[in-house]
Image (tube, rainbow, N blue to C red):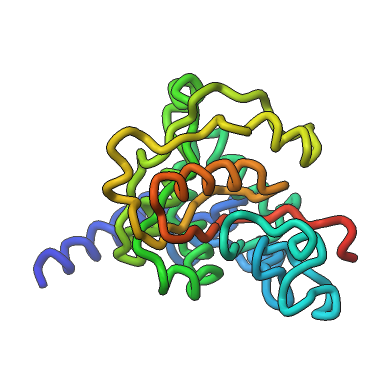
Length: 249
């Protein structure tokens, strides 16, 4: 009781010294870690209908067959299901890019809360959370893995086990942002493997792979292959944002 009271008092003092501001802009908010009303309205949260396999948002349910988009019907991903909290657009980038490139590690917790709501059904079935890994050279440059921060925050909220080092990047890959889906798949092919000793934690487990953004799915597929090779029973994918398919308009 005294610890909780002291924590509440500490937060009150902090709010008095540093009034809470929106995570995106400088507008005042009621508590730390919130979005102001305008920024919240600007976020395009993904709700039904969306593809159950790749989480791509759809305009209407008729764009899916049994809840699955045409692309996944033609070429199913190697993971089971995917969920995403938001569309990847200029508004969601204002949350994700500062986490990824500008040391805004404080954004991991609120993004994880959004992901928790979006992925509630797959998290309920999960045994273990595993983040997409960074190559050591990129990790040294960035000093943290944003997917690892999201996985750790989700683990805190859900009480699920987290294995931050289950996967390893075998080589540094080139930047994927300007590549098409086929090029992305070629770049990341065989670039991810289970870390030595991780199989004992992965064997027979229902794993949820955590990342910030899902674009073509090439990285998620490479990670899923590594997890399944290490003995995971099945893999789902949960991300903060999903790049929309321009064909689904």
